[in-house]
Image (cartoon, rainbow, N blue to C red; front, side):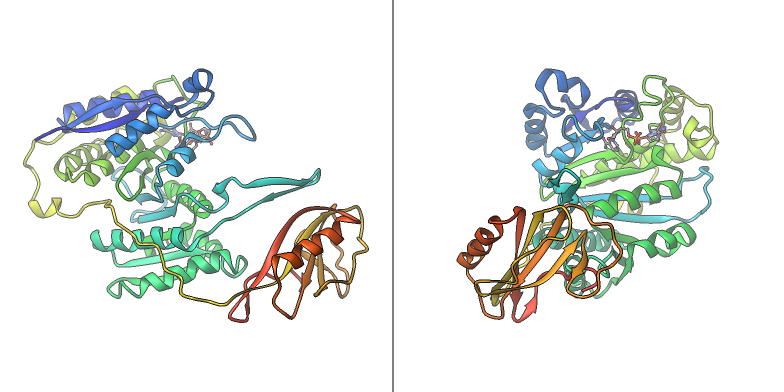
Length: 462
Ligand code: NAI
């Protein structure tokens, strides 16, 4: 069998320790992989000014597959996240995070088997954040139809390939009516094409409560980037914690596999890290590469070691990374010890999702929200050109017209101007010019209608 070349990023923190454990196990299991090591993480920041050198990205592009150890991301400043950069640069639009009960790992529930598919590029992870005034920050949550369609279709394709029964969309469309509403619409549209799968949806808050009380009811879950980030850690907790939770970042023709956990600086260099999460990510990679017999051998060895009670510190044991790795190597079953049927279903697969085509539509400009900086209630013009002032809000809550709520006012107001007739860009330019005479405006959002339906949200209290 010809070896497959895989880019290896050991990362930083506990990354090198757990990567070396995986390499040893793969070598003992005779997995047909040639590793091409590439740099990423803290060691690169001083050298290159960022955590991800161009050569590393090129290596992944060339090999179309990588195994990645965790990399540290500084909080509130510093270099950009290596993970987010990899996912975006390579368009790895789906993040697959299975959480399955492991033998011998004692948790509150015995029968968890959830695969969470997380959108991996969009949402607030676009990182579009701006200070609006010295007191106010805005972070944009970007949800697109093609991005949502791609990841949702992937979830249904994966569920079908793996013989799963149910796909559940996790969202907050009761509050984020447009962004989560679009995601949910896409889900319903795609679900129609997979009548053999049960498709339903649940609000994120309820999903979390249900997961910590009856997790066995869930099968495949699909959600947006930020919700997926949080819910997948919750799912990891259900099956033994971050030390055992694997993940794969899947794109159209490439994939990067990594553990859910981070660089664990608190235990880095101590030789006590659990390599299970990265090892399980690496076995997901073997399924992806259609090498299920090697994946099954390694999984069986891992399961038997855990069932025998050997555990690292995070799982309540005393084994070092090295003890645990050696035990897995000794437990590797002989080749040919599996039924062919056991090797049939791939755990993760690729798919070629087409972008949704939006049909002809009447997309009409009807007004604008102008955001201004001002201390205290602003005196603003009632009418500008064809537009009337219809609303002033502060922190998303309506303060004009009608009774003013008791909320504390910050120095950032939204002025909504609307017209009953179609507008052009020139009308908005005139509005901004008029507003600029009295105020500093921070940003402007155009208000559209599609076939007579408002394509913008109302303020709370409106
Ligand atoms: P973390 O996942 O690194 O650690 C959280 C807790 O879990 C710590 O107590 C740690 O010791 C423990 N833990 C994690 N993995 C373990 C393992 N394999 N064995 C035993 N214990 C383990 O999360 P934290 O502390 O919030 O983040 C540390 C750094 O990692 C941050 O800079 C963060 O940005 C980065 N990070 C990187 C990720 C990646 O590269 N994929 C993912 C998540 C965080």
